[in-house]
Each structure stands twice: as C-alpha cells, then as structure tokens.
Length: 210
Image 1 (cartoon, helix red, strand yellow):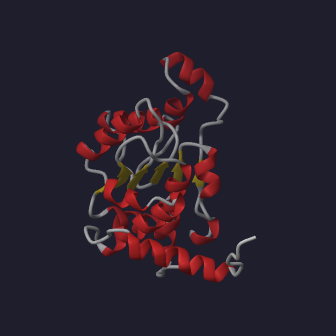
Image 2: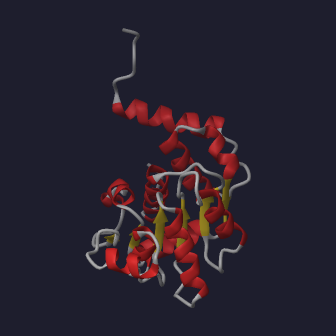
C-alpha cells in the first residue's frame, strides 16, 4: 500500500490550498472566488473555474439573505442533504418540496416533471435557491420570474445532464431577470456543487473561511 495522508485537518488544508494554487480565480471578486473554490473542491475539477458564470453581487446578496434568516430552497433531497446546517444561522429553513404529496398531481396537470412542479410551491422572495439536479426546475423558476414571482436573493444553479442542463443555465446567464446568480455553463453540474455554494455562503455570512 502506498502511503497516504490520514490527518483530516491536513487533508482539508492541502485540498483547499491546491484549489487556490491551481485554479485561475483572478477574474472573480474576492467573495465570489470563495464560492468558486468550494464548487471546485466539491467536484475535483480545476477547469470548472473557467466555466463559471456569475453576477458580481451574487455572494453579497446571498450572504445578506443568509444573515437575515432567509430560507434555502433545494430542487432535490441530495442538495438539501449536502448543505451543512451548522454553517447556517440557527433556525434557517432548508426546504425541498419535491416530495410534497401535491406535486405528482401538479406535474400531471401541467404535463411537466415533478421537479418543475415542485418549484411552484416555492416562496422565492429573498430566498437562496440551489439547483443541483433538474434543468426543468431551473427553467420553471425562470418562467415564474417572468410571470412576476418575487426574485430570490441568489440563484445557485448547477443542474446536470444531457437534456436541458446547458440550455437552462445559458438562459439564466444571458437573462438573469435581475437576480444575482452563479452557474456552471455546459452539461456539468450536480448536487454536490450546489450544496457547496450554499455552504460557502454560510461560511462567509459567519465572517470567515474554514
């Protein structure tokens, strides 16, 4: 067996040091760079830094929302489970409506996915939204904004896949509807990235980097 690091603190420190050394973070404001570092760490792909699209105020807006006790909406249980609750203020609600008993009928009536229908149960005004699975959830969120729904404080959009993922994120990046956002262009994404972005906001909101 080859030797390997066993000290969790050393592993943690070396991991983030590697990301900061190898990733090109120069184009990001300092607070957005911290979100980027967490997203890169979650997927192990340094090149993700070059594919991130963002609004310059996404971190500041998300931090303010977290500090104010705003809820976090997740499009799937994996995103919700990946959010480290101890990093958020006590009492912060992490809401995932995908398994709400009303959703299957709503999806059938609208001829859409459960992920999209679940978004209709979100109270988006001032909230932090994290999407790490379903492109249809992001598309529906944008449709709701077009329909006049209150704007979230931040959209952290990392839907993944071969049908609609790249397109939904391109729509967000090109027409963000006045909403601060962070997203990863292309097919890549996933729940770990979305959760990591929320965790980064929590750390920044608490006044530190861990």
